[in-house]
Image 1 (cartoon, rainbow, N blue to C red):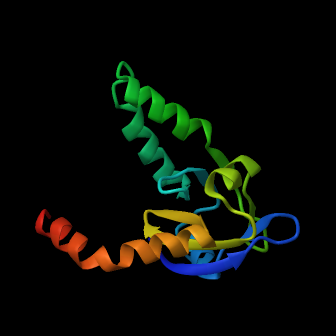
Image 2 (image 1 turned 180 degrees about the horizontal axis):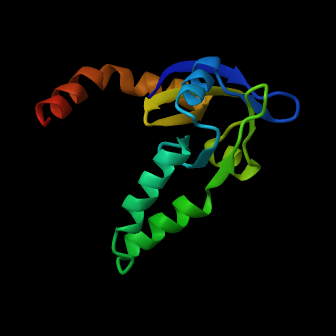
Amino acid sequence: MFYGEYYHQLDRKGRLVLPSKIREVAKNNFVDKFFITRGLDKCLFMFSEDEWKNQEQKFKSMPFTKSETRKFNRLYFSGTTELVYDKQGRILIPQYLKDFAGINRDVVIIGVSNRIEIWSKEIWVEFYRESRDAFEEISEKLIDNL
């Protein structure tokens, strides 16, 4: 559903303009609300409301008697907030999430099918640089298991 790589900056008030392609996909799929939370690899995960409900169901079904499940759910859900973009397509990411992801001004927004990831530009560039050479090797391992 969400695809692409977009370079943006936070405005003076700390707001982020969602790329027009992402807003168009959201509009065409009747998405007006997102949920954003701590992601993996120092990025933020942002889900449509429907996809968030799917994710929530998966995590709720995990046994809470396991300490790793409790720890993960606490960190994941406590960091979550609901976002609605304004008429200009802007969202306001809470400061604690920007701190978690190391976001100051320059941001990279990537579409990863069922979610959007929001990265600090510096962290994304480093992640991409370190990962791109292993892309073919990783794809061989993953695709062979499909």
